[in-house]
Image (cartoon, rainbow over all chains, first blue to last red; front, side, top):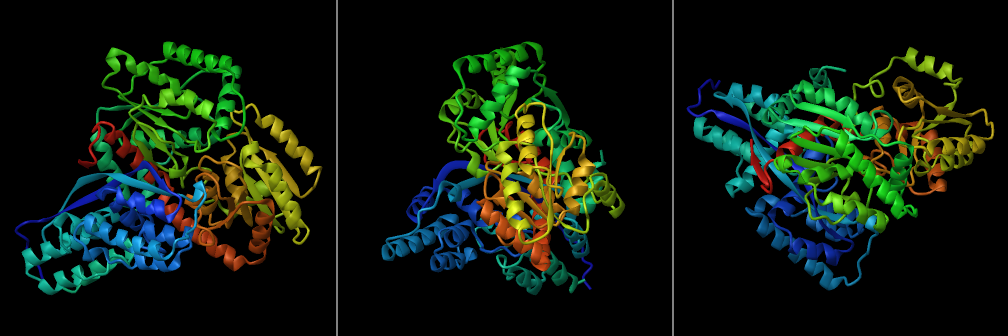
Amino acid sequence: MNNKTAQYPFKFFVKLSLPELTGIYALNLAELLKGIKISDDAILYYHTHHFLLQFHSTAPAAPNDFAYWITSILGENFLGEEIAGIDLFSFNSMEKFKLKLIAIIENFISKNKKTRQVEMSSRFNFMKSITYIMDTKKYAYSLEDFINILQNMSVYSLYYHFFESSFRLKERKNDFSMWIDSEFKLTKLASDINNLDLYTHTMNELKVVIINLVKQYL
Amino acid sequence: MNPINDYAEIVGSETIDELKEIASHLEGKIVQNINSTAVGGGVAEILNRMIPLLKQLNVDARWDFIKGGEKFFEITKKIHNSLHGINIDITKEEFNHFDQITKDNLANMTLNGDIIFIHDPQPIGLIRAKKQADFKEKKFIWRCHIDISSANPNTFNFLKKYIELYDASVFSSPLFSKKLKIPQMLIAPSIDPLSDKNKELDKKQIIEVADRFNIDLNKKIITQVSRFDRLKDPLGVIDVYRLVKKYIDCQLILAGGSADDDPESVEVYKEVLEKANGDKDIFILNLPPTSNIEINAIQRMSTVILQKSIKEGFGLTVSESLWKKKPTIASAVGGIPLQITHKYSGLLSRTIEGTALYTKQLLQNSEYANKLGLNGHEHVKNNFLITRHIRDYLLLFIKVQYNKESIIYL
């Protein structure tokens, strides 16, 4: 049983976002590639992460908008699957992910000259979002506090501490594991949480899995 | 109006706590909403529910209307249709009348908001007030509830000179937007799960409504709930029903009404009556705008719900139907594809024949129909309820005060 009190509490934040249209769109693969090349981190981040918040308890069909559009709208299943399979967590910056994405699409285009042109209503719209980081003023000083608060936090908090953290910290780490490791020296628990496959669970599933892992140490 | 905390039962207390926290960052600000009608249509319906909830969150939200007159609203209906891409000529004299009414409203209205939130094209010209010296600190947002992607260029250019004076614009779908010099935010509209139109009803209430209109609950029911508007294609729905009726004995309910700012609806209603030609299994219900319980009951008694629009703003009746777990077939136009993922949370159709085929499939396969309805309910719960809509608006009101910053720390 771990009833230690942390020297530094875990401060729960939420990350909220408001989507913004960029006016850039693609009707075919070449235009998608062109759009990706001029996209900044904010655009790429939006298209690889917003689905996580749209499907709280239903497994998403594809883990990013590029893969979804290429598969479902263009009908290029092989390419779509390859892009869906890119492990975002193997990149510590959006720029590196972007280079990988460009390389895969360029390679495909070099071998498959003819791809579909879609109508305007099926276009790919490049978007980004305004980000809001908000302090919830809920602080955990023990693992028990941590579970109790996490149980009642929205998926937007989980999103901030679990997904966004990798890009903020520039390595595959999440705020929960960092705190558990530094405050309670529970290296295995921290590592188990860190190793959860973020892109194959829904947000609600992840919350339950994390809570159950921590409960084992109470 | 339900207390905001009542929504916790549906969306979780954490969501309500979050709304309260976000709203606290708007303390001392007045948010003034302006549109053209208090009743009828989706905009008035959303504002009627949202304003009291914003007030409960301690946001000083207000709602005012512009005044127009019959001629003005005939012109704004033309503008509305022509923004939807219908080929209509709007004369210079009509645009001048539109501008004159804008000036009259500016002279008679008090624009006292710190954030002035203008809904749709009718009051768009109020942005002229921004050039007043004491209005420099005020933020103006234009909320476009309609699909302007295939807008008549003449009409759009007339409005564009106003749109680009705003601090930000808001669209319901990425497909609705145009290239503009101002930020374009994406905010989908919503339904209120606790409103009379969407709350749970007991069986007795549903039976009472069915009895009142002589609807047979033992016979399958196809329904479309919409204003009597050509863009909702009520005549096409009758064609669908007739194709289905050849194989399956069913009833059709066309339930709708008219709005103050839609003089065309009376004409369309007559055309629908004529086309129904006295068929005893077709129920054409021209309901007053207050018939929310009736609409709710009609949706809940339906076997399949259609939304066969030719053009749509967002098509909130689709979310209403999905919220009630009803299998729904809708045209792949406007904001409908955001609400329905084909063969997952409903069916998307494009033609009368296709809609009739899907209707037959759903009427004959209740297991499949139920699955679509359940998935649709879950999708609406996560994305199209009023609590999400309020959150997005609060974030928008905060955003316009931060100019071009892309990360805002609260």
